[in-house]
Image (cartoon, rainbow, N blue to C red; front, side, top):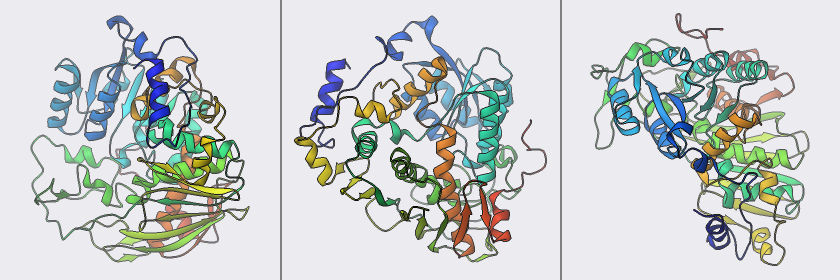
Length: 452
């Protein structure tokens, strides 16, 4: 896509707003894709976790990278990824640490289930690697503290896969509008993220051939593999469906919250407003009974299916996280409000851009002044790879990511306990509630501790 075509795309995109001329900007004469076309210039990468997101991300980054090593607990996924991504030429491993030992691999992609993110990310940083990790970055708030500490100590580049930040005509443009003062002070933000599914009782089943269930569980509690066939992919506590189990995920609150709460928090940040709440509370429905924050049934999905939470900030701003309205982010300010999702950016301030367009550099300014190549997932990868060369902070850095993910995690703790929590953002502690504060961390199973 030529530079002119990129400009035409942003001018004519139906979702970008009427007659708005906001071009892409480049800080270099060539893009990463141009620079990595030659075989000798391409970047070797190790893939840790070869499921749907790992495969999709590697295809999106195919212009830049060669997948030379793949690690997964499932041999069928190892083989499929090797065939589709590397023509069968990559080295495959059961143990991801074999990738971290290789001097020829400088960057890795961590696309494991959520409970397996923190351990390889920290160990990769300590091994001198730069990392692109799928969202949500952590399973707990405490893990986020550990990752940020190691990142500061090692200086490694870590990009989180919240690619909405690199969707220039929609989310990035919405942030640019906030940053340019088009909404004034933000009074309320809303992240609508949809609900989560339920399941019937899922029976214990034989582990599929090639799946190392012990390794797949890793830091999580030891339990049986479960599977129930249906007319879709089947219901299980393993591949993909792990996100509906508290043991491996935070459910929809972190799965989609990591996208929309991120944009809502980013808007507060560029507007100079507080990004850590002082309290969060609301209502939530679960498919199982909870006692002292622990699900009392272990044979079915257990994360919240419906919810409505309000996080309150010290300046009076509120953030609503809910499941029951249009998926997207609503930003309400003193001068107007806008709504943005993956299909549209709308609102009176957007319509006003026809007669009063944003400055030409507004979107790049919102994008930290970093190079803007392609769009969405591909652009997010280009951003990460540019930053591995320049050592600039990427657009989805671990520090801003954990600011917003802490809100998602706090909502999950509030949901499981059924009460409002008070939050000390400076010390990252829940105040006045020792039971809730104990849920900032979860123990790792023996033998799967982080290797420091």
